[in-house]
Length: 527
Image 1: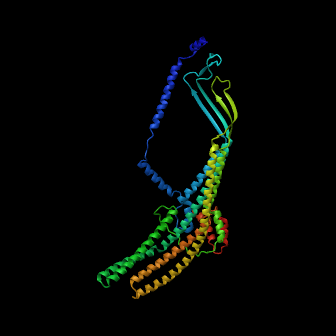
Image 2: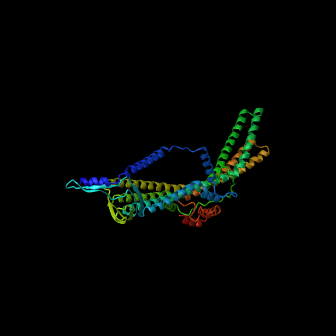
Image 3: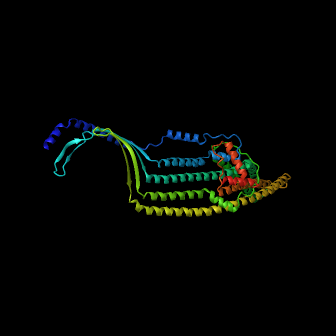
């Protein structure tokens, strides 16, 4: 046997080994150096001034890009249409729904079998060889030999399918589908809130269109009267107390004018923001005729409550989250079952020592993580607690929504009664103002009292407009409380502004139809 060992050492090609080893060591050292240098080369790189400027310019251009320009006076339904089509908050909600849809598309792929392709190269500086030793005699029983080349390439393509992974992926896909439905409910909620805000801001902006010039003119009259009163005080043609009292009343009028101007001007800016118009964009509003709204809705009080409990986004979201929690229970149970993986594949190896360089394989493998059995009780308790928590939230929301429905009906009735009272007050104040102006022309009343009554007249007009805006908002709140959408599926944000405005006008006019028959049909379609 020693002679065999000597013969093997003399016949082995050892001359090339040192050179090959040195080349491999050099390659390994170079690769390690490159990796170290790459890791050390990463340093924080703050945005430059040029990059920040470019980002600002790009963001400013994209804010109102691809929007239809304002071609004329904007009406209520065009304002709603522009908000639904261009409002950025609503676009964010729509994009969230789109993201959830893409996640669902991706989740479907997780249920498919895995088709894996592998390829690799293997090289070494010397031959891979071995000898054998007898377990009985302890002597070498085979001269050193090799069954592999120094450089080989290998590739395989395998198709595998895990039954347990499929079950878990199926449950996760159902959860992703429910998450998409939750994002849809969030979009509905954003749209309803936005339409309500548009109605409120629009009618307040209408008040500004009607009264801002009168308020400006009255403010000038007050300034002139203040100048006159200060001149009277200097000449001492009246008592100092009377002059100061007169000035105090004028300043109080001026303060009320400024408060009204601020409130009305802000309303138009808020409306522009809701329509995603750039700040400072000039636009006018269609000043509509005020029309009465009926207190008769398409549903009774009890019917509204039941419709709200079926349609409200908050309760639907809780229902979807309960389904997601149930799927968590399914996933927790599946993880405690044995995993069975079946596979089939084809392989290739370039090693010339192999008798078969190409072969196919098939097999089944089962595995079971027994430790997961101890985790399942804790997972089950957590899922049950979450279900109880969601159920309590559902009960609390049910009570809150029922209360909100009744409150919204009462608020609309009160707003309508307040509008009637404000209208009567405005009529009476208008008569008083006319009488005071006539008396002032006849030198029977002072300028102070005329200004005071003119201010009261303007306040009466503003209060009437605000009461009308509150009634319109309360009307929309009733439908929002019962969960009816601000637009139907036939009204799409992909339509033009004119088409979208027309669909919204038909929908909302049918809801406020005083006969109630068309409104009932609209409620049935919207629910």
